Image (tube, rainbow, N blue to C red):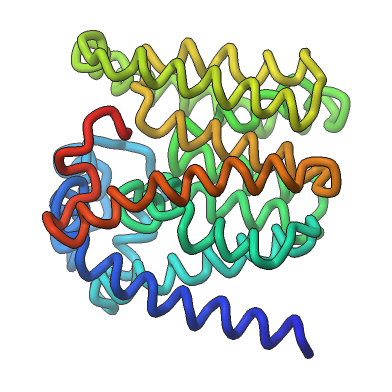
Length: 308
């Protein structure tokens, strides 16, 4: 009964918080996402990926399909507020099961910089993490878990870095026939998406903030090692991430690195409780300028240099 009450309060609070955030966030990436949402109303599905590529610069299919399916029925803000509430509630359930202190959970869900970025700016990445939440929470069989993981990657390709350790161990879980059936479409998809990535290389090459982003990744690598001092796992996660910074840009990969840290730390919450609290106190402080910028300019990144 108490848990159900907590769920209700988390969902209700998230509704209020996200109504405020989503309503105020009208600039930045949301200009493109709003335009894409409106453009999918009554759009023939065969034109969906072309429209997605032209509007928000991606051909990763899961997010466009979801938006296409709901855009004729729901106003965008209402739908995104609902999705944010579901994401925050699933995050609460995961952290509660991991025995994270309740006050720490509230701090993470409602004041953490990276959660607020997901609620507002990083819309496609949020849908990927939402699928990952389902994968982590529910007791599906291994094949369904693997399928949901693939869907999260197809939602936002950069989430493949979150699964780097799992991909290394995957041959121990599945038989060769199953691997061929599942991995082959992933390889085809990567072949499909690589030209889009290569087309962005020039725009990423001169972005000096990506060097600062690489430093952030190293910080999260150290924090993740402190949470679980297994050097092999740490390197498998973060070496590809650091190199990926100069391929994809650091903006979204830093968010992925934070969630790698959080996931790793919550595998042994009793040991890492103070570390989780310390990191999230800093990220709550970091969110103050971001939220202030949302209120004043409709864009959390306005005049915040190096924050992405």
